[in-house]
Image (cartoon, rainbow, N blue to C red; front, side):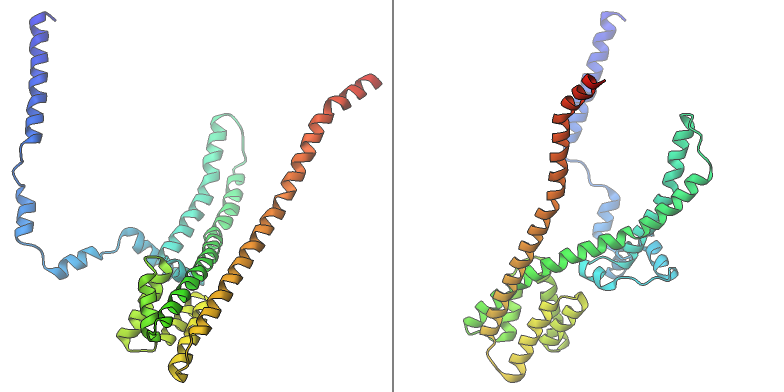
Length: 297
């Protein structure tokens, strides 16, 4: 390749790059398809139907819900905001993983020259599939326990906000709604706000709606709030002192529970520390023991 050819190639590459840069900087002409869609939008019902069209995963989850004769933990799923279709789909995927994972390991062993009986991956796969089937249940139970503890903390704050509204002379119904609005975007306040809004739209009592929510989520503190509202609406009594006392007792219960959990975690750490001390002492005494046996022999 001579000098002239090199110069021509470099000039062509530079010109092409400059042309692409100018093309990107200049405003492009609008595309015909999107422009026509903006001028003639689809009817709202069609867009809504297309938006809510279920995906393949959702359809598979619905099929599993219909076909598998098992009892679903509806309350835990409702508490965590997880659908039954997603829950069963996770269980099915874990079962398939447990079934086929040993076969992959056996294939790797065969490739490196290790002979494995054919029944071993089948037995191990069945055992792993049975174990993996209960993994989502354990995870769901653990997350539900944490969510209920978080809900108790949120309701303690909610009771304090309600008490502040009651101290300002606001009615109970308005105090409940304003406290839920002030609470922010936490999921606890969101659930309470949605419950109170539904009670207003359906023209039902707030205490009945809160009690239903507490029973559905298995959160006893919400049932206590419903009892306070019911007492105020039926007997006309002031519940300010009752709400403040319940909020204080709830905070005390939560502090005691956290202290007990911390003590339990501290006790769990004693066993690893004891094992570590034994290992260190064994390592330090090992040379002396070796010398003693060497001199004896």
